[in-house]
Length: 151
Image (cartoon, rainbow, N blue to C red; front, side, top):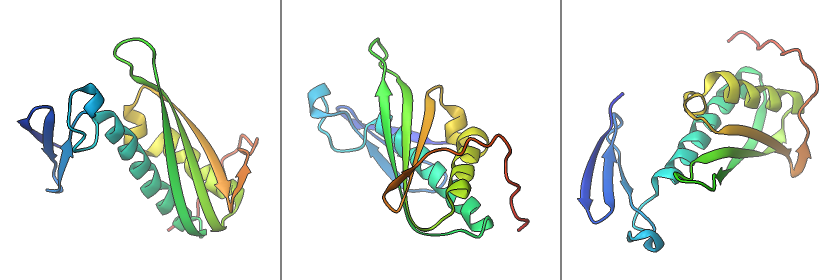
């Protein structure tokens, strides 16, 4: 995979990857930019939520689960010292519909720990939280993974 990033002046850069869709990045006004695009750190969280969302959705489909909606909120905690890297990411999944708590947790954990290439590329700890129909669902304490149905 290759991404090409072109300087557009000041602190703005435009990146284009294999998909061909351009993406504008900029720094905030407070940091000397114009705030005309997403910040690079913001895009890390965007990439993680997209990767996790796609993977979880595919796993839930294999598990014959039918969510009505899925919203993922990523809260990145940054370190105090330079380079102020993201050290911890809380991923909160808000799911509505008929979804078994054990299945959503299984899908989230599999993606976070094994399948999501974005998660695997990060040094930050990823801490998932799951809400179904507005109620927080604790992670099941079972140590055994349920087997996925064959596609």
